[in-house]
Length: 402
Image (spheres, rainbow, N blue to C red):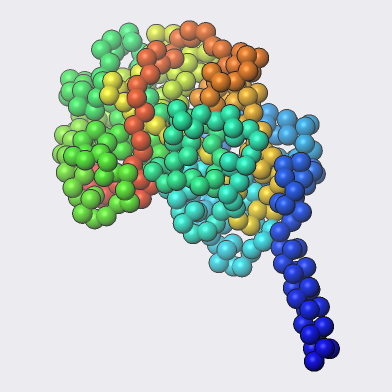
């Protein structure tokens, strides 16, 4: 009996030791240990690559984290984050757990985040433990904690703001429409000179969601997971609006441009009256790059436009979790956020609470009165719950897809 007890005790010790190895030392010892573990790691960051400015900014980030933390940051260029979700999902199905994944960091938000969170495909919570997270304006920018009406719960770290914005050449369009209803009136007066990207391009989907938010009988219902009954009730005025708009769109709504960049170019060429963006500084960027004239102005509808935050998340099976966290923390530094907000580099609005930063860091964000900037910001309207995206896109495709 004494032998049996001793044997059991030793076995328990072995099990305890084995359990301890499941939690790496870096995860138990605070931020300095995470930074130490990150040194020498390669971080594969899967991020949208549809903009030269964005790609250049990510290259700069790679240079910075290599110099300061010895991290090799690889930009894995993607066109659709949904493809990354599918890959991580497939890795989980194939049993590639622990640190065997191919994705260390992913630029994400909306329905893609909701899917990864729901399916247990994310590492965390980690975001609110990042040293620089304390600089985030969570009170003034509640979407930094709430992604398409889905609580982030620390499973993704914010790194940029976005709001639906329109821009046009004021010489061609002196009277700016201030609602979707006013946009319809303009389309009727100027047929063929307005359009939006084809869904499921996210700018096209956002155009439809903006109309949904404006016309929904109960906007609060949009914050809840979609049901068939709620979808039917909240879209009763949306489809008549789109039916009325379609024949007055570019090419009578029988074709739609592939993306927002195509719409912007058609506006620059004079074929269209206006373009849309999710970056309020895009027109200023284009003017600074001499791709648009200084007469181009940006605006948001008087009663508000849809806005959200974009984030970075770490898959559950990332090989370089410490390195990914260090990169996410660097993205929240005032230096990184100020460069990102600078139209000379990107012009993507910051998630930080700039007025509360020390004077030297606050000074990094100062900008002049540049042409093309939104002169009077409008209220940010919350995104519908992420679950609304798929049925909206499917019903739009059924009705208007060509």
